[in-house]
Image (cartoon, rainbow, N blue to C red):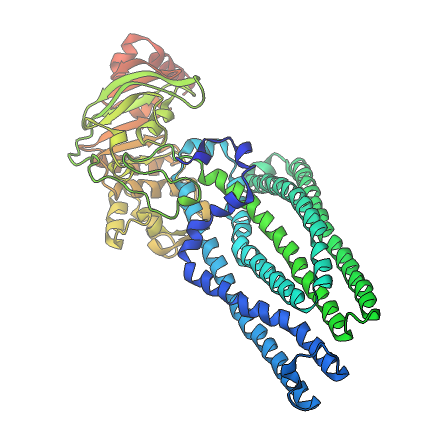
Length: 618
């Protein structure tokens, strides 16, 4: 883990701009050749730009026959000298037209490639984080950082860094030309840059702070938008439109307020430069006029310096604008770093954690000697497992039990007893706070996560559907053939439902399966589990969304699917679990009873009470 990982966020935000910029270095190294070519092209562009005022001054000097005319242009007649100057001026214009366009294309290409790579690495990192991170992080915040923040970050290269280098080089070349022509005027113009630099630094610091707050407000805005769209049914059913609109308006106003501050500081830089550039030109006219009257300066040189004053402040103006882009990019680096520096809590043994922007540069390495679940028997063992979502507020307390291969177990208990948490721990979505979990005698922390999750299949109460066709939602990108998908559907008695769809297995499903009923989505979840032929099958209220007729069909398929497989069933309807081998009764994270249905009824404990209450209710 890098040093920056161990620092609090407030400390990391105070990192220098240079250190923040260096965090992009791994991505820049991938495009070293293109960056080198684009930077080399800056030299002839800068020379061509700086030579033009000098050539115009020489033309004036030649026409007025002043002593400041270079001997090279005096070798022939006046017309020949002017033609040479015009030819040289045309060359500088062509250099700028051709090379500037090509150089701009290369820089934009590099910027877009870097943006795409950072976005890809950020997505990969986010999807590798533990579920615990998503429990505390709003989705809108992640969306903002994956979209607008990454775009701003890519502009650091495409518009900011190379652009600032180009402007700085242009100013340096112009300054060199000025000193070769007349050092007093050159010195006066250079001295005006000192107060400009101080003002730009101040305004950019203020802009940086305002920009960070604006992006935080944008995250809040996107979070509210995402929440309202996702929960639109509840919003409309409970008539929360006006109330939610009021909350959104408040967040929107806060965002606009912070954006206005960024606009103020950005505009302040431009206005300051406009005034100082006018003062500088006035200074050239005053000092140049005084030297001209003393015959220490020619009219041609004065004209050259007036043009140089304009050219010197043009890149400075652009420099300030690009500096604003870079400050926005640095803000984006800080915000994206907060995610990329988030440690991957659950990882395979032997994998190396790559923090920050190093993440995408080197792939994670997994040792070849990791345990793999090869002898698929299906034994599950919890050894004194404790778990807390936060601090010491334990929701699982000293669970210690063994599920034999092929055994069917039901988890029963009131809401909040820890049933779903046990499943999350078994699937390694969370790590136990204390104790360990073993499958077939192997600690699940020693098993690669991909192997562990191939070993078991989980059917949740609410089956999630991705945008795509039916076949893709069953195979989930694992490369199963259409024949294998059809066999899995037939095995779970859901083929009839699929064949009634407009295009059968190729029917396009909308995001979250909004063109399917809850029961139909659940049927696809059964086929999704069956095709993977798991050794352990977990059912979390899996048939709750099905009607009586469909549930009977699926139950028949489940009876066949569960043969020679270990099964863990979470059920609130106790009538559906009478035929399991054992029932675990949980209360406040503790295993207080276990046994068959008949044994627990005879004990007269919590299970018997729950059973009698359900029977009374029915």
